[in-house]
Amino acid sequence: MSHTPLPWASAAREGDDFDSVVYVPGTPYEVCQCFHASDRLEDREECEARTHFIVKAANSHADLVAALEAILPLLNEEEYPQSRCEVCGWPLVDDMKHGCVLGNCSYRPGDHNTEEWMRISRRRKWLQAREALRRAKEE
Image (cartoon, rainbow, N blue to C red):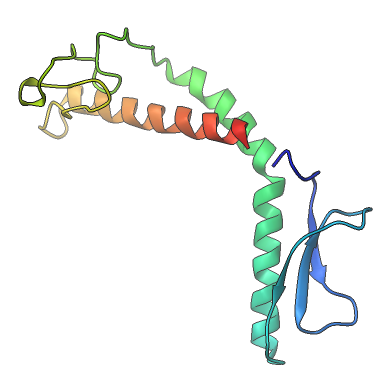
């Protein structure tokens, strides 16, 4: 999102019933447009809804990053040493037949609803949120 200034806005192009645009208010910059080839009201409303959704997603990016930054520390997850699986925390081995290898968890334990299974499920969600935050900060 850093390549185009925020916030964005959307509107039907003035004088054009077939085109909705996403633009940067107060500038001549149009980010994108949505074109529909019919004069049906449903098509125009769908086009306007699409541009509105694009605007809403772009403008909420900073809020998403702030929320992830606030939530992740509350989960009290720890970084595991490199000798342990990032997902389950078990020691890494050389062969997947015997457990987890670097970058590939064997997803132990397999029994659902055990305390260990719940811990690993929470850990997986934390890792996903951490990755989402990393990607969001890159944009």
